Length: 142
Image (cartoon, rainbow, N blue to C red):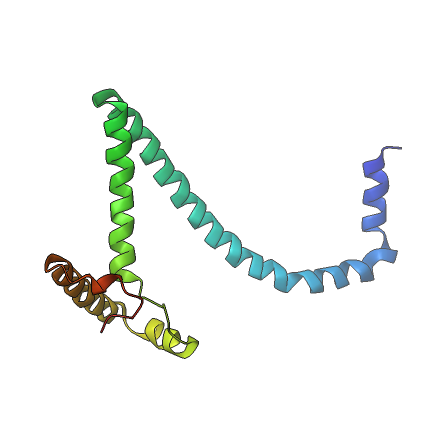
């Protein structure tokens, strides 16, 4: 007798009816939570595959039109520059701050954070252009 028939007979037998219901009741909440997680993972994977395809497809086209060193430096340097701009304007500085202060920072609206970070960045650029090197000190900027 095939092994699948034995397993099916054990699962579908009336003696296991209680165990089947118990298993279903235990697994049902996890199943619904799993649907939410799977939905989020599906969206994240779809974005990953889409942007990977766009990057690889455009990279091969760019490789045909420019030299390798220009392509690598320009393409990945541009991505790094975009990441730096995002980091500079959208992520607040948390150095030398307590957890309560960090919690207050992240409770602010994004537009308020961006305005404040733009002012701080402009001040740092002004200080650097005047050769005031206190920018590199360990004290936080005011």
